[in-house]
Length: 122
Image (tube, rainbow, N blue to C red; front, side, top):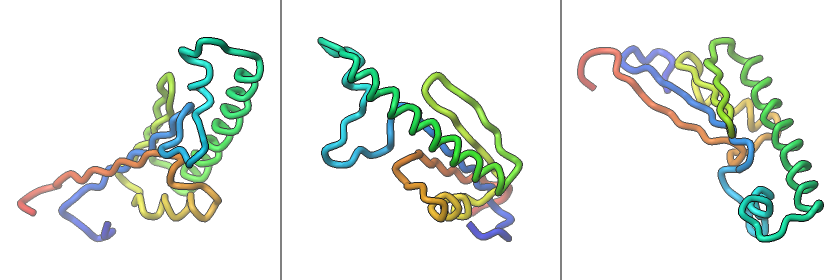
């Protein structure tokens, strides 16, 4: 979005889900699927889920640190299975560039962008 745009407010929302990625690659299976509603659950499945969650939560914390270091006006809320970061004062393109430069991938979060009209007709 053009930083000098006086007609719209851009609202960016980053959603970091604990148990899921946005896209699973071929051959990958969500570790939670092997535990929830499974007929038989063994210690190996629990350990795999634990390792996945430890890595996933560490990656989420890393993405949050980068975004918070770049901009200080975030609304952050936690849900039972996700963390949501929202702002209307930081361009999402800049945020994406920072995350990519630091080794994070687009399938590690969900980005939702909304535009709100300030005044007049577009």
